[in-house]
Structures are given as structure tokens and as C-alpha cells.
Image (tube, rainbow, N blue to C red; front, side, top):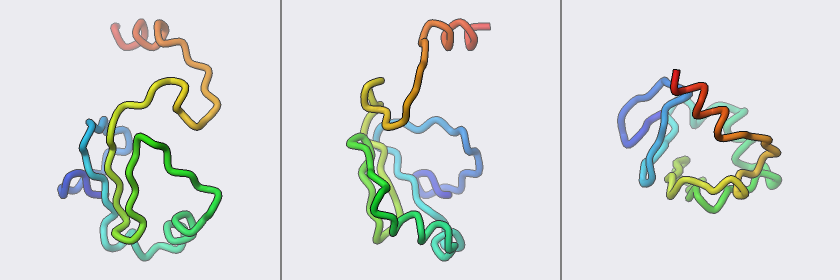
Length: 85
């Protein structure tokens, strides 16, 4: 993947608002990628702007907890406590 035009192979990279994430040329031809982009059940959240033709996405803003599209049971105080060590 490319992050703001530079190669990035860190899956857990922290992106900031305005960052552009783009697939590399080799990944644009992968059948699983093409199948996922063509899937109609794949909704793009409001905080991400996706361009399926160019195969890139722009991270617009940090989502609120209620905007995360996956069922998440998270306790922010425990996360803060874990990472403060």
C-alpha cells in the first residue's frame, strides 16, 4: 500500500485526517481486491472518502465511537491504562 504516495508495509500504521491510502499497482490486479471493491454489501463509512476507480481512499476524520460499523465493546479507560505502561 501507499500512504501519501510513499510505500508503507505496516498494517497498524496510524493515519491522520487527510491521509491518502492507495493500493500499489500489483495489488490492483489481485482477484480478492477486485471482488471486494465490486461487492455491494461493502459500505464506506462517512469518515472515509473512497474512489473505487483510482483504488484509493482518503481518511477524512477520526470517527466517534457510535460511528464504528462493527460491533465493538470497548472500554477506553482500559486501553489508556494498557498503553500508559
